[in-house]
Image (tube, rainbow, N blue to C red; front, side, top):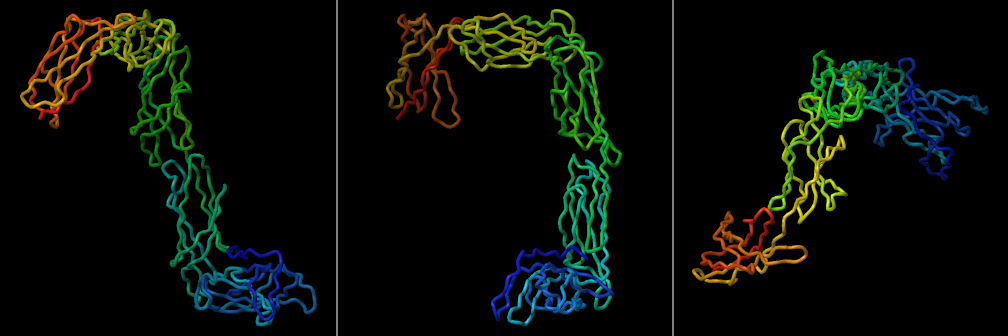
Length: 521
């Protein structure tokens, strides 16, 4: 018996009111059976109170109310005897055309206590069904992880015995291991199914069934071979403790068609720690930090689509020989700190391209240090680096090789702070051709107090209000013994003015006054 027409039934029999047919849920189910070239309904009962001779089956189009045929149960129980059988065959069904129909179970049809269970099961009206199933790929792999299954269901028309497509039929798909579901044929008796597979998939068996017809697809899981080519490092690595040696290579795979293709976005581990993603062309590059002697393994991350492969190199005993040479540090007038120097070794050698991570550190007491920025230094090459943190009046700065815990000598950097005060352009509103005066005072910090700063050059800048205008220096003036200064200009056009102290000695920081807009009428 087919399984496509199972129905859910209730645990109790509901009695209808007198003289009115009731829609109920009976403890029964109906299905389809082919016998002697004819189609019958199969009635399966689980209720001792309903006898087969009281049952008839109405057949309708799915979703419609028109009754196309009504058949009685052909099997009978002996009168006045207990009915021990559970399955009963109906009279032959006659319908106008092949298809899948719905069946209603009617108990005591036409009587006052008539009961009706609508949509109790499905009737598949077709003889000798034949199912064919094919797939567009014959195995599962990285290149074949999306597989399309297509099939056709045909049957003989019970009226003409002509072989026709069986439309609207339900087929069940069962996958081993796990999964499954229902599929339905279209008007041409065809169906398609898309199967998705992942890297943890295994050999799978897919069975498609319709009534007693079953077709099976077996899809083996094929892993592809990986090829790992490492360009660096090769042989034995001899490098200082904490240094970072370059690692470069390419990862490819042998595709299903036998060609070699790059593997993109695949992780490469170095010594079981670093994970480098491969690029579109399969190449990868990174760094290995030298900490101890021994064998270092380079390998792709394990992935179920591929067989594993690996490469290894040897690291010689790493001496602690790194050092900073020609190291200088300075703070300019705009408080920018700059380190210049080289990272090298006191003895031994290093592979070409070896680098190290270097931290720039700051301290207010030359004891407690904080990291204010890092950069990668290449052994043997000059570096020039500046942290984002600005210099203060007086503080300490140094570099530290983070991998080797090596610190440079510290540098005490700082200049005296200067400040433009009472800086102003007057008057605020002026007629064209009239006089404008730039004035103010320049002071310097000495210890905890401020003092006038005489004999210094102060610049006056102007930027017109026109679109795209830039700052232009219009003049300079010197500060007097009390630090004050003054400079006169002729008003020409609207714009913004600013007084700047930028011509500083090496002992002082620069300062910039406020921007002052002047409206020229």
